[in-house]
Each structure stands twice: as C-alpha cells, then as structure tokens.
Length: 441
Image (tube, rainbow, N blue to C red; front, top):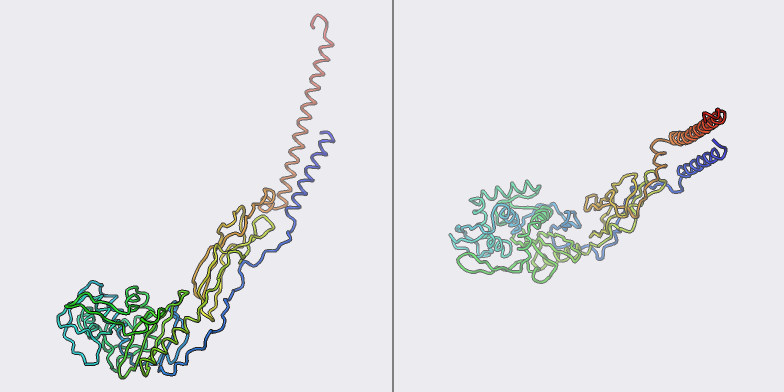
C-alpha cells in the first residue's frame, strides 16, 4: 500500500476516535430528582369567625365530599333526635322498595300535635309519594305505612333499622320506632346523623326530594300537597336539605345541607335547640361558614416541569410536565400533595407530549386525581456510535474500529498484490513473445 493510502486510513481512524471521544465526554447538565417535593396548597385564613353555637346542645359541620369534620360541638353526645329518625326509615325504603310500589296504610292513631297526611286505613299509595310525605311533611302515618310495607310490621322494620345502623358503623345510634317518637331507646349523635345523611345524599332520588319546597302527591284516595317543614329551602338557594325534627325531649333539631358556587357541599346537624328560630339561625351560620372555607386552587400546571428523566445514550435530561392543567376545590387548611410515577430514563426518539408516566394528586393523603405525565419537548434519539459504545463498551468499539481499519488495510494489500502479479505476468508474456523465432510468431 502506498504511503498516501496509509496516511488516509490513519486520518480516518483519528477522526473516528475524536468523534467517539466527543460522544463519551461528560455532559454539562446533571439529572434532577424525578420526584418533586410535596407541594402544599395555600391554606389561607378563615373569612369569618366560626359560629359560637351557644344555643345547640350538640352540633357538627362536615365536608360532604370526604366526611371530614370542619366544626363540632359535643358531636358524640347521645341525644333524642325526633323526626330525623326518619332518615333511616327513608334509607331502608330506598334500598328495599321501588318508587312505583304501592303500600296499603294500616290504622294509625296519631296524637293531635303529630305531623300526618291523614291516610285512611286501607288507603293505597305509591312509595314515591309516601317518601315525599315522610321527608317534606314529616308525616308519621306515612312512616308507619312505609315500615309495614317494607318489612311487614313496625317491630320488624325497627330491627332492620338497627341492623343497618350497625352495618354503617353508626355506633352511637339506636332506634325504637320508625317515626322518632320520644323513647329512651331512640337516640343518635350529631356525628352519626351527618354520616347517615352523607350516604343518603348520594342517592339522587333522596337528594332531589329533600330539596323540594313542596310536592303534590298523585296517588291515594285524594290529591294532597305537602310542604317542606325546612323553610330554609324556600328562602335560601344554596340550602338543599335535609330534615327537621321536634319533640319535647329532643327539642328542635335540623340536619341541613348546602352547595356552594364552586361545587363544594357541606352537611350540618344541630340538636337540642330551644326554638325553631334558634335552630335556623345556627344552621345558616354553620352552612355559610362551611361554604366560606372553600377555594379553587391550581393543583397542576401543564407549563411547569414536575420531574426530569435521563435520556438514554445521551448526556441530556427530558423535562416531564402534566398532560393538562388541573384545578381543585380545596378547603382552608387542607393539604394538597403530588406523587410522581415516572421512569428514571427515557429512550429517544419521543415526540413532545408523549406520555411516559403519571402524577397523582392527593388531598389530605387521599387520591383525588391521576393525570398523565408527558414530555415537554421532543426528545432526540442517540447516534449509532454512542449506542454501540453504551451497549458494548468503549474497548469493544475501539476493537471494532481497529478491525475495520485492519480490514481496509488488508483489502488494500490484497488488491496491490494482485495488481503486481498481473503486471509481472504481462511482462513475462511480452518477453516470451519477443524471444520467440520469427517463424513461430
């Protein structure tokens, strides 16, 4: 091989080694921790002081979304609960009967002060009408008809009420009748009533009924109109339930509910109030205070990276961002945290916006949303030399390059040898031709 060819090969090898050195040189950026520190939504300060609740013997205010307590006063004190007993009567009816079922009323002897719709013995009425009479007018004869229609008798129904209370974990609740008449064995707590109401409000038929200011009963012997005894419903748009009650022992009681402009929902309970006016004042104070605790906060920002991942075979990192913005309604004092689930490394080529993981958003430690985690920009792939170096190692790459260069040199030598042999053969033929006698030429 000529000296010029060797020089070219050496130059090529030098260039390849220079490129390899540049590929394997340490980069200037360092990979960041892909799991960001927990972020906390601003708690802020209450817009108004908490209600004093000087009139109520017991009270509670809860977040209807998760049942967490916002405010409480003697929440576990067992007390007579009057007609809020009918909340369990309603739950069993909703779980065991269909709206179109027809029940026959049995004789019910009511005291003059009792709420009733004057059902005639033997009168037939649909379940949906009986429920409206139960929850709006608080009709005791409707409660008796539902109990007997669902379970066959009032005692059997009361057994089911207590069994259901135990299933729901209402440990401080006991029922003696489906109506709420005063009885030492008929009691509950503010906490248990709020928990029961939270379950009931998940049932659309119940939530729709307790939000009615009045209703017309379409079945029965004659038309009837029942009015909601919770007069807050007709006056305040944000109030949407739930059940009133009053007896001599229980005093005035009210389970309330309200929904705010942000979609927040709270449930209140007041027990042992001295008057209907005091009951309404305390309930409104609780509901307004509860709704004032909520704010809309930005939980995720799609323009901000929450994690990074090393790019395989490249000294670069890829920024990972949420796939979309996320806003949540948060209560003051609640903590919002995020948890990233993403790989330590990603392999190019990846387009911008390609999902590689997810980010979980937790409120008070409970998962509320999970959003995809995507690449913030295009992630280029690595070149073949870098891939070979990473997969096989530098020594193997050098050996491969050396073998390639050796093959080039060997091929050049073979071609040179063959050309020289051909030239010598040609010279021998020419010499023999020149030395041959004239007659043989």
